[in-house]
Length: 502
Image (cartoon, rainbow, N blue to C red; front, side, top):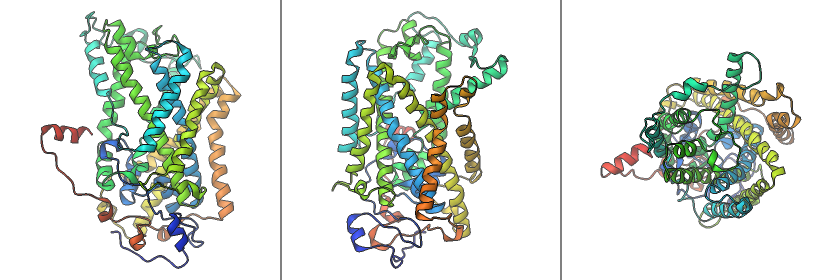
């Protein structure tokens, strides 16, 4: 499946091989093949959630740069350039957002707002240190299952006050709040649901992390395939059930939920457990949510640094960002991405809160572009596989509903890009309009800049490079023998449970 081919004449220079940065072949328009220097240290449990399209492409080609690389390799080099830089700044500005969230959660134990700057500094140092000194501690902690179980116990009257909540709040004030945008109740509630979906998408960003982590994941093809197959029940448990429990525990018009204190006391779980008379559990919950925010910030920093590294490998960013340590860490890319974490200090000033909310909106829209790009790239990839006679069913991971899932994904992400800032048309605000739609201008500016500068063109299905490995240089798509380690089966019941869950 991964036949070795000799380098085409003129495509690689000896100097570029030594530097680990490959220059563009004029014929092929872009730097298609990476010399991956990063090391495979992430395990399958770190990969966690993903989506079908990126999972299938990544199990075929687990390389650095991943889906921006795929976009350049199988759609258009200019498209890959735009996708890569869009995804870089989307993740790099999300890092300080999560750092701020983590520092705010610490105020649950210390209400002195003057200390927030200290907490931000500590969280920044911790997250940056993890990314610099090793990825093996990445993404280890999640307690959402504990939240769901504890929330269900409280809802059924298992708390000290024995108040059985049930679906009380679904009846009064109701399950769905109004958006207060139009007078018609049903239309207004629909707009409220749409608004929540758009806002919640920020929390779903990172599902594609499996692709970014592919080049550093042990046995990437096997482990990524496992992660993709488990996506359904993980989303069901971690998101759907979590939202259901929150909706049962606290009413949307709860005075504590709406007090805007800027501290973790606004958390619906904390409110519910305090009200039920549980004294210790809110502290545990706050600690769990803190680890979640910390892990998310770590994830965004990891993603942005690897995307920048991949851009440098393809010649779409300065080659200095492709420098790695002897242990395989893209140190310059990590340090550069880490510097953006300092933006978290903006939250110390009250006047900067509005700017920080803009970061969230920009990141959300950028995330939609990322998802749209993944699905569009898959559609092109699938056309190329069919045109060149590859049987996609022989890939380590293949979803039988493809390419229809990709078409469906393109449709909905495109809709969300267009409606992301829809509320501004009811209550117009130039700042909100700017943050809601500026990403469209940025993305197409990046695309046309590279297209004009490099004079690129869209790849024809029969011309896509789907197999190049370049012999012993490990350049391009690595073989299965190069990436996969022998699988060790679970030895006892606990390892079997862990295998299912993680």
